[in-house]
Figure (cartoon, rainbow, N blue to C red):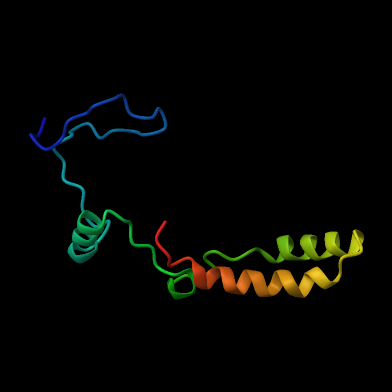
Length: 98
């Protein structure tokens, strides 16, 4: 086993370890983001509205329709527009560090 890898505890059962623990991990992030992770001790997360997949972080049409129907059912129609605004604003907030 590599001198850099030391298993301190048992991995989560859903985590499948590779057969060779000396296999390098690559292509998950570029060097600048990795250095930022180490220096800032925070994970960089791109804002949802800037991801390549324009549907990332959005609700499906079915979810939106069911939510709107529920607001109508409980006589809270004003919440439909409020929720639409909240969904749009939420996509712009996802860039803040945790």
